[in-house]
Image (cartoon, rainbow, N blue to C red; front, side):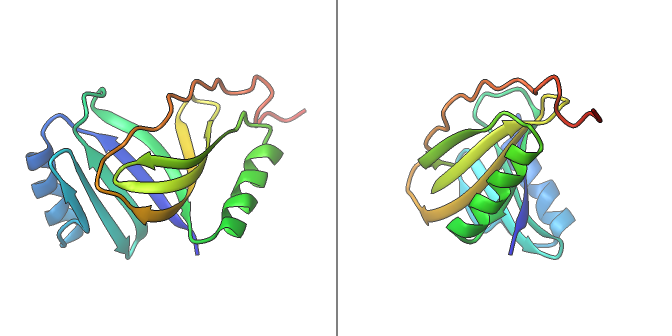
Length: 141
């Protein structure tokens, strides 16, 4: 089953944790000095915030899957949409090791499709993915 993912960069982690705890009416499932994540079932979402020096606001969106088979299906959907796609296997990011595919939508918003393999003890870093939306993406021919 897929789970929608949103990652927001924040400038004050503590203040934002208080806000999202109240909004979601629960504590984060992962809490680190620079990162918090809520794995919610209603709505089914992986909502993460981090304070890692990026510009505050939407960092990226994504689809989290539970198997390699689901990940490949999402990747095929990205290819079918004529989006540029970059693979990132065994990525260490956000306190998890994951296999991922990255793309950007026509507005330039980064999207990640990922299968988390296990938790790790460090935030890690994704590769800097520099993709540009395809000029023909998502436009009728």
